Length: 333
Length: 228
Image 1 (tube, chains in turn yellow, red):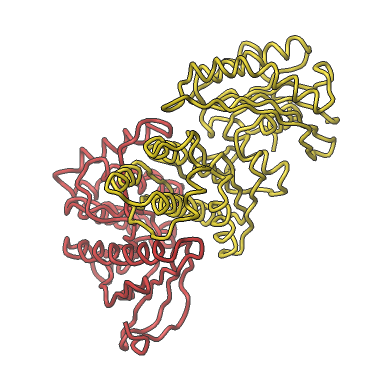
Image 2 (cartoon, each protein chain N blue to C red):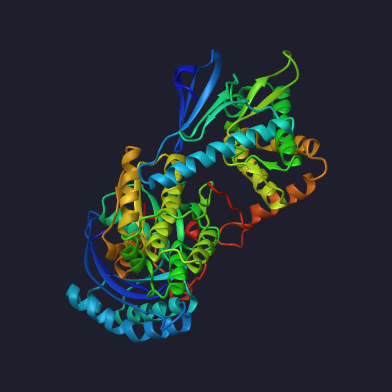
């Protein structure tokens, strides 16, 4: 397959993003641009319809910006990729509509991709790992994913809420901005005392609602904000790293890849590196702009699928809110 | 736990969480299970988790034994070091032995496997990680009736709900069929043994096992919580 240039559109949750990547004939990748806009609720959690309205307003400018920075015109694209799921329905539909329109105007194929798989493939394309276990930690998703027998399979996941969602819910109670991860990370640096939050791991699965309830209660009882922030990070991230290690041992892999917005956290990145070192493995930690939801990762997977001939017909381009990782037929590796 | 009581001979297994060493403890054949510190964890959290797991595992083995299930005796525990000293039970794991056994012995082992899980469930316990690597074939006819020993109950413990028992059975089903796929059909014998071991609760747990299998991920799942 010749060189290709693909634009990717991401809009599964509160972030709308467009990114352009170039894939060379040998399968090497280069990110040409990423333009993103994150919607924050004035108060409370994400309202899907309001986020989608904001995405609809921002996406045309983000797409123009990403094409401009990459110095490509719409007709020079090889394909337009979009996140077909999983995610919030109204947000997904907004991104899908933009992608359908652009692909029709430019006269190029459409490629619908799985958002979770894109988090993994961006690491393989740009970080140099071959066959990693992905620890994917974001607001809505918390999964441990690896390739086995022709599919990406979920070896472990949260049994209740995503780790980022847990941090955001705590942040809302503590009047921190949304998303609350960065504010909690800053507060945690001043933490001194580890508070006894419940640690909940079952096999390769984790659960966060117990520690959330417990942290809220401790906060109401006057525990220090800094100690709470540090304890939330220490306990939640230790759970994540432990199940990632279990999965690596189970499937016999020696590469760990981080993805998702929570993977931008410096403490989680450090813990992932320490775990990998401890077992003679390597940790691949993409720069934060590639960990958070972004259009470039959608473009990367789109380009891989395009090279394998896996484009999406218009009639098959409906969004899939519950698009499962292991439903994707992997034809490109 | 005094180091002088303990003599290490060899490493049996190195897992993600613990290392298993064989040796002697006060002259008796024993296994040392050592949960090594994890550098990535906050030291206090690390100590808390290792102590809690050593304690929980010792308790689960003891409770299993009280329910009439053959488990290794807990000889010593050092929570601070995350260490357990266990009786050494000799014999191949079911995983290693099963496919090579004659038909009649396979049937005996399959029934015994179900019987052991049934007895644990009947006593209000779950194993937590019932793969065929976690059962040792200690004895087979003609040396006597079949005896399976149950090891590594570190993920198990008291659980009264039908959901937990269904999950336990489901795990055994997955492990049995993927490891012994030539004899997949013999899982029916495992269930036969399970019914005999858990006469009161078997049907509920078996139908829950089937329901769990049809659920798949991203579906509502029963709340399972394990504390470290």
